Amino acid sequence: MTPTPPYRLTRRTALVSGLAAIAMPNLARAQDTLAEGVRRNASAFVTRHWRDHFETLGQGAILADISSRALHYWGPDESYVLYPSSVPMTEELTRRGYTQVVRKKVGPDWTPTQSMRDRDPSLPAYLPPGPGNPLGTHALYLAWPAYLVHGTHDTRKIGRQSSSGCIGLYNDHIAELFSKVEVGTQVLLL
Image (cartoon, helix red, strand yellow):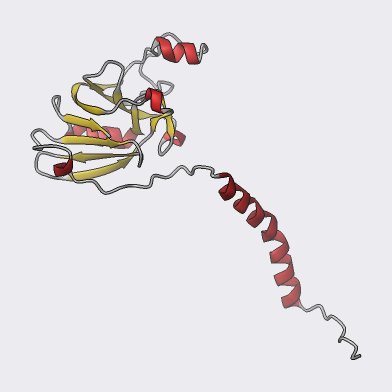
């Protein structure tokens, strides 16, 4: 039997061993997180084309794609913009179908619906415009009561199922969209 040579500790071996020891717990946690199926705060955007959903562009068209958590906007000149969005928390809170923008408001105020207050009794009865308002800086009101496309001050919500039925955008995105959209613009929640 041949004796094994003695183990020699070099700087290279120490460095590689140290890095491996540091990385192992993080790699194990990452695998556990992936195994649990935790959702990331990122949208898996799906390319959409207005002709697949609208007969004409008219004043423009908004398509809120709930499954990919993205809002598509086509202007009357066929210009196109894609925004990441928040979507309703559950299917029960989700309304799908065609509607239109019936009103626009800078600095919207917020009155939670009774069902929102039933789910969370700590909600205030009313919030004026401002930094604590969940509707953000701008709102596009749809023909369906209590359904809006609006901004949010809580940027963690974008890319997630986090709303009570509305479609939420970053405040700078809703401000940009607000400047493009006219009352009467057709909307599809898909």
